[in-house]
Amino acid sequence: MSPDPWSAILDGFERDIALAVSGKVVPPWTPPLDAGPLPASLADRARRVLDAQADALAILNRAKHDAGTQLSAIDAVPSGPGSDRPLLLDVRG
Image 1: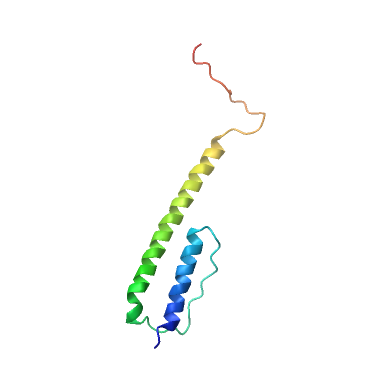
Image 2: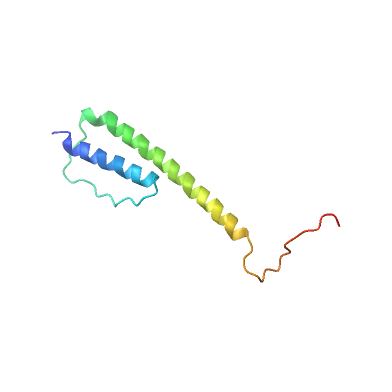
């Protein structure tokens, strides 16, 4: 079998990784129906793509964590004019 179908599949994975880490929407993935086994000549590239996917997942998980931290900080700030918390604290006394 020619490596062309697998080259296109790996190209698609690389494109999706780039979209994901840039914050863009990644289209849903549909598994190929007739690609056959991965040719040995593309095994190193497939490993690199797999490593890139793991790196992208780590980047996205870190961004998710950071966003959650920021949202928690925003939620901790009192809002509205009716807040019953003091705005200033006199430490001199």
